[in-house]
Amino acid sequence: MARNSLYPGFIKLRYTGNGHVHYQTIPVRPFLSVGGTWFVVLKGNAAGELWTDFVDAYWNVLKPFLNTADELQVAHLWHYDSEDGDPIFREEYAVAAAGTAAGAALPYGQQVFTMRTELGGLFRCYIMECSTVANVKAYPPFGTGATKNLTDFLKGSTSAVVGRDGAFLSSVVSQVTKYNDALRKKYLLQQ
Image (cartoon, rainbow, N blue to C red; front, side, top):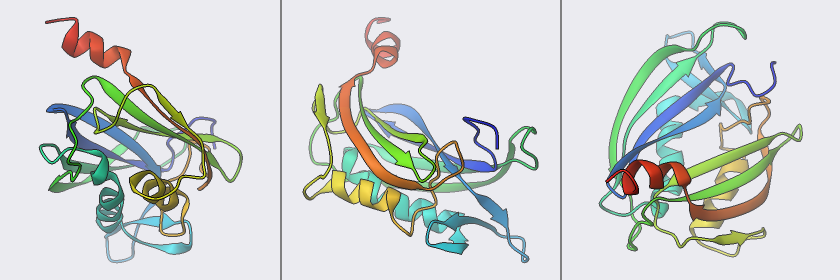
């Protein structure tokens, strides 16, 4: 597989944070079942599960980071027929599920979870304008709560998330929050 590739596929989430639309790309291994239904391979189960069921499970650990005024709007499944081909849109899943964080969103902020794959590659989970404080850097092990739940899920046996090297996630490197320069420029400095 090519280095830093999204092959064989990915899920693209559209969600809101602080009232702004954001996208998150999640590399996965999708496949079409005999019945014509799209599945994703799980770390602990090559038979996988419906890609929409995985999105629901992922949202359950992601929603505590987003304010109740924000939501996961829709998920799109993309697949590559070949390693050097273009991504092909396969299905849409309208979710429309709200976040659960009671705290206010950090305007123009981001929270980034950096993780290692089983092959030593890196994966970064970005959550934009979530309910957090800026300029925090933390290292595992994480105690309890949303951070632990998300990282345990991402590296656990029921996760379909892979790094861009195609390998499943195995460990957490760090968690960092900061202001995002692109968001500041787009929403704050252009006013």
